[in-house]
Amino acid sequence: MAPRPKNPPPDRRQDILEAALQIFAAKGYTATTNADIARAAGVTAAALYYYFPSKADLFNAVLTERKAMIMPNLAQVADQLLELPPDVVLPNVIRMMAGFLTDERTLAIVRIVLTEAPRNPEIGAIYQSQVMGEVVPLLIKYFQHQMDLGRMKPMDPRLTAILMVGPIIAGLIMRDVLKVDLARGVATETLAQGIIDTLIPGMLVQPKE
Amino acid sequence: MAPRPKNPPPDRRQDILEAALQIFAAKGYTATTNADIARAAGVTAAALYYYFPSKADLFNAVLTERKAMIMPNLAQVADQLLELPPDVVLPNVIRMMAGFLTDERTLAIVRIVLTEAPRNPEIGAIYQSQVMGEVVPLLIKYFQHQMDLGRMKPMDPRLTAILMVGPIIAGLIMRDVLKVDLARGVATETLAQGIIDTLIPGMLVQPKE
DNA sequence: CAGGTTACTTACTGATCGGTAAGTTAATAA
DNA sequence: TTATTAACTTACCGATCAGTAAGTAACCTG
Image (tube, rainbow over all chains, first blue to last red; front, top):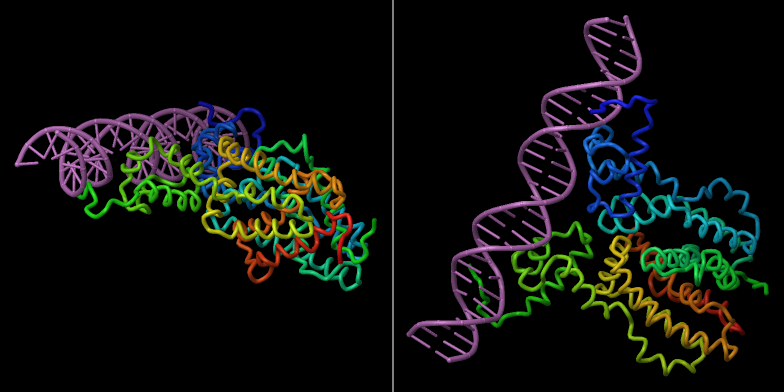
C-alpha cells in the first residue's frame, strides 16, 4: 500500500544489487530466492522485475557491475614498479593481494565466483579474462623484465604468479570454507610475511639473508 | 513395469552414490534434482527413497562414505618418513598431493566441498577435522622434528603446510574454476616441480643448489 | 489542478521439486 | 505350490519458486 516512497527516493537499484551480492554469496545462486533478495533490499519480490528482466540478469549485473572490486588496480602503478628490484616489489604485491582478500565486499564476489563458476562457464570467463588478460600479463611483464636484468631466476612467469597467490587463496579457503580459525594460528599478515620470507629468496638470483 | 531386476541384482546403492557424486559435483546440491541422480543411476526418483531417507541424507552419504578418497593415507607412511631429510621428503609430499588432485573422483569431492561448504558448515566440519585433525598434525610432527634437528628453518608448521598446498590448490582453481588451460602453460608436474625448486630452498637451513 | 508517467505493490499462475502412498513383480522361504 | 519379502515402479500431492498482470499512489508536466 505504499507504491511510491514519500521521502527522497533512495537508489533502489543499488540497494538490490547490494542485497543480491550478500545473499548470493551466502546461499549460492540456486538456493537464493527472489524473496530473499527483496527482503534484504526492503522491497517486494516483484520489484526486482522493475529493474532486472530476470533472476539470471540480476545475477549477471551483480558480477559485472562489481567485478572491478575484486581486482586491485595494478595497471596504475605497474609502470612505476617495473624498474624497482623484486625484493622491494614482490613483498608489496603479496601484502597487497593478502590485504585485498580481507575486504568483505571482495570476499563476497570471490565466494560467488568460486562456488558458481564451476557450473556456469560464463562466470569463469568473465574473471578469466580479468585475471589472465589483465593482472597476469602485468606480473609477467615485470617478472620478464627482472629476469632479463638478472635479478630473478628464469622461470615460467605464470608459475611464479601461482606460487605467490596460491598460499593466499589456500589460507582464504581454510578460513572461509573449512572454518579454520587462522587468527589463532596463521593470520593474514603472518601468512603474507611467511610467503615473503620463504618464497621470495627462492625466486631471487642472489637471495639476501 | 520392471520392479525387480531379472539378472543378478547390481549394487544399486553404490550406483546411486556414484551417480550422485557426479551430479552434485557438476551442478551443486540445490540445483541437483532427485530426477537427475535417478536418471544417471538408471532408476526412478522414488527409488532413491528406498535407500536414503532424504536428499540431504543421500548428500551426506556421498560425502561421508567417500571422504577417505580425498585424503592421501599419510598415516601409513608417516613414521617411516619422520627421520628422512626434508630435501627427500618434501618433494615427494608435494608430488603426491599434486598427483592426488588429478584423480577425477577426488576432484569431484573437492569441488563439492569447495562449493557447498561455505553454505553448509557441517560439510566444512567433516573435512576440517580430517585436514586439521589428521593430515596437518602429521605434517606438523614431521616439520617440528626436522626443525629440532636443525634441518629446517623454524617457522609455523601450519604456515609451512599452507605454502606447500596453496599453489596446488590455486592451480586447481585456475584450471577448474577459471578454465585456464594449464596443460599449455603450467602442467601439474611443472607446477609441482616449480613448488619444489622455489619453495623448498627457503625452508631448508642449508639450501642446496 | 488535471493527465501522464514513475515506481512500485498485491494477487496470481504454471512449472518444478522433494517426498509419499500404494501397487507390482521377481526371488525366496515354508 | 503358496506366502512372504525385497526391490523397486507409477501416480500423486503440497510447497515453493520465477515470473506476470493489473492496480495504485506519489511525483512531474503543462
